[in-house]
Length: 236
Image 1 (cartoon, helix red, strand yellow):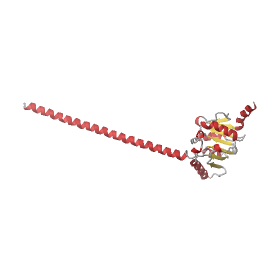
Image 2 (cartoon, rainbow, N blue to C red):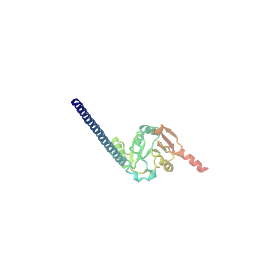
Image 3 (tube, rainbow, N blue to C red):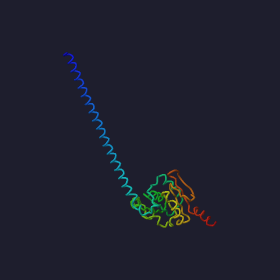
Image 4 (tube, one colour):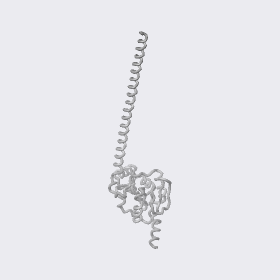
């Protein structure tokens, strides 16, 4: 009888130990899961803060480099800042080889097309309504030691400017404004003028030649060639 009670007591003790051990294991598992959950919450919080900081920084840069002057232009003529690539700039210079005179860059941005054209001997004017980009380009020109007579960046709206003094024009604008720009340039540019357009060609003008491919493709348009079909249609 005593032996049976001893065995019974031993079994109860083992059960209690097993229960305690199981409770400890459950507590460890719960603590581990709670710790992982807290880490995930912290990671998500950090990710949210990082995303918000990146968005705030991007908006700050947009406000600094794109917003100044943007409100001066009618909505249908608004164009965001799109810098030319190195290949695109080289293609533009290919289509300007052998030419000289005054060049206007419509929406000159950071001035890279203007500086490249200046190296070929053109007298260049960059039209830029963004005062921050215009100031940056002008400062870079002075830092390079380029005379004011060779390169000038003006804070003007080219849509409201008479472009008849320029026999070379470079353009990198959005496709939404190209049809309107056709009309303005055809009305104002001299007969011997050439217009070089980046990425987005004119919808109606016949191009003289092109260079590059894909996003870096550029087209050259000679005004006298463009005006011939117009003159012929008027005669008919």
